Image (tube, rainbow, N blue to C red; front, side, top):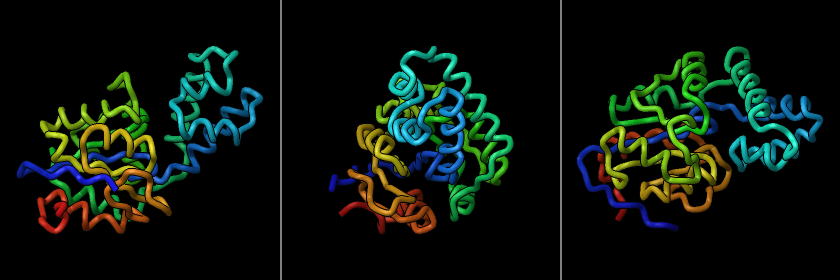
Length: 222
């Protein structure tokens, strides 16, 4: 297992992925891609498998190379915006309690989605939105590039070694590790490769995340 970066400052920061980490949107994403695939006469299951590991434009290039990527993206965006308005989803257990307990200015959201959708979902599930949200429009390179997490740290005025990344996907974990941050995985049955710590659910991680944020020596690496 990779050693955790040793926290070096008095202020600690927590950077959260959104979908799959704080918001339970897996079924929504599957349905959006299913509807999109059916519109283009494609195999929904294959499209979703590709979409899970690539950014949308890369997905289009693989599953619909003969289609205009901008047209494909517009169709996907329309479906996702409709899902924000009408879809059924919720926050993972412990999410509201956790975010409410973190001090303002010490946490951020880092998402491959867009900020207006995050705000829409958070409003519907009662989660607070932090001052810093780094979304797909804020960076040219998405996860697994470290750029999104480094951008969030910079906007918070934080050093990477003082940041904890909370993720649920391999690309997100890789992004956090490449940024030189501590990375914990949540909401997966088995640990994503590379994580410093693994929790089966977000609820199980709440106490430890808050301890990290407070600088508790109980979670400092040996």
